[in-house]
Image (cartoon, rainbow, N blue to C red; front, side):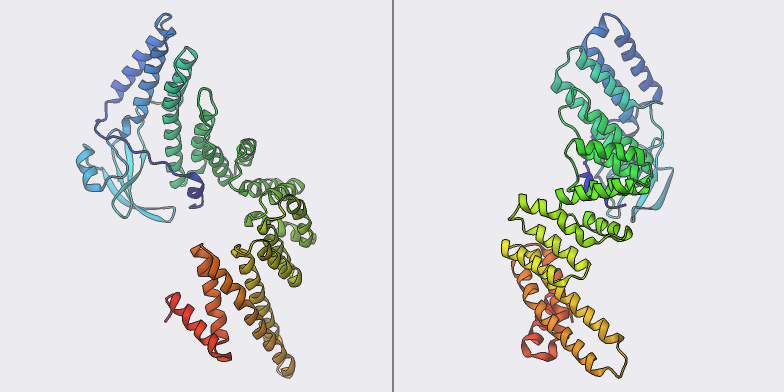
Length: 435
């Protein structure tokens, strides 16, 4: 489940923990008093009346966690909490180990560093959705004349609260609840007088709905993302395609991927899904190359388009076409590391293919075996220059490491073919921390 946190831009909702938890009865009395004032014909006409009602509901929402501050250590929390936990246990969540402490109104979770990272309300001070009630009160205040900036600030706090609770639900593995809470945040952010739409919340509503198997809800919010121009760098098209295919709509599933590839030709998920779909439909994946033509016409200097074309052609073992595409990418932009990386990987793959053929030959075909081994050696030698160039120009440490790892393997295989190869192996072996 870690993937979502890349899209979430997880908010830090630090709370001031000077307050003490009030009794639920006192919280309800404050709400009843504020609601009675709002229902008064004269007082209810004033924006301030509804703002006070919104604050009463927000106090109800935050009351169970009034003495909880995220980010503090266990020792500090023990002094601030005002109560001892009724139980303590170790739990595994999203592949991480946490200490869970059970309190009267909430469960709190500490990471392995001893920091409080998450809380889960188990006994709310208000029976309904206090955040929804607060939002309704603030919107009413705006309708009765409150300033946009004052109401918007209050609504943004509610959106943040929904969002934080959604992250907690996601971490706890409750996808339906997470989707509902993300959706509450998203919907409120699209409500007047909010001044900005929380596109992360919209996207994560769909993402968690899809994880929960709720295709209709996922599709609804993914389409809202499209309408807002938010595509998560194209990954949204792959998600919509997977929904369409799960619903048996192959044509829509294919069209989503085609549209996504045109808009984001460098998105590997779209490309991989499209190639796999073409294969399952018994269509020639090579025809996908034609889908890039329109993008090439619009962006003739975009080297990544040719890199993508090379990847497609490698997938159907059109190595000559792929080599031409990778070299075109490098020609267009000599500082584009992926053109060189693609060419190096192509030669390496050809070497692997030659090795497989050689290993499959019967013992009496030694001449053909020698030919294939010579081909393997030549392919490895051809891979050296592009991988070296990639390593030289790339500023991305992950790319440099991948290129270095390939070079280490190649130089090791060629170490008996000359001192330069032996030296190359020693260089990259030391660089990568080898023995």
